[in-house]
Length: 233
Ligand SMILES: [Zn+2]
Image (cartoon, rainbow, N blue to C red; front, side):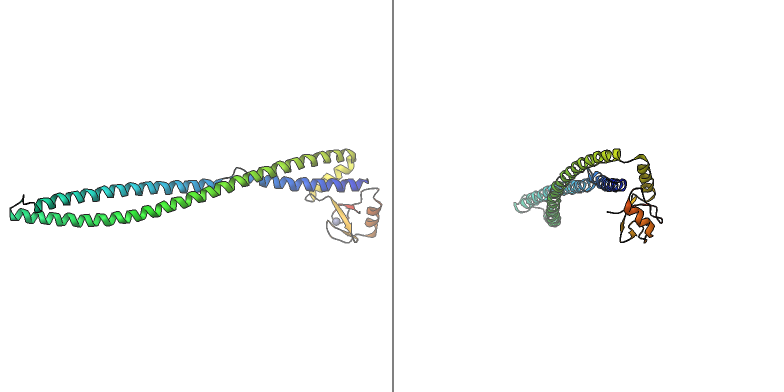
């Protein structure tokens, strides 16, 4: 294999390694990231607390309605069983019963509203709970998939590193140094193909002399414009 062909192959490996490392970084940044799940859990927690609070209010309201109901029955009994005979007392008792009945009506209305709120809160909590369950399931599937991809890429990277090492052993030191220097200066692309007389690194038309040197391939021919190593298939 010619020196330049070796360097071109090295570049293919390096680009592949670079690309895979970028993918790996992306995967790692997504692994274990569960912010959405945490906020969904917090929201469900809040919804459940609100439901519990409303249910508590409903029970209290039910007791209240019950109490007044008993009080009314008690006072009405007194009103009709003849135990109170004084007309003024009877009148006052009558007013008391009416007052209690008004209160009873109001509290029943409040209770009804609370029952509606409890119902809505129950539906809300149930919906959030099933959404969280779905999210959790999807998250675990996604994490498993990411872990699998990570393992695959790591295996591929290890193989590429081995391939690179083996190739580097064959490349002469000076050529390798030139390659690394240009790679650094030219954002990873040190070897440029020559296609239809143009350097594919910087796209200029190459003088015949450059093209010829690239074709012969004994020594490393460099593009006189961008300085990349020229490579012809
Ligand atoms: Zn060039």
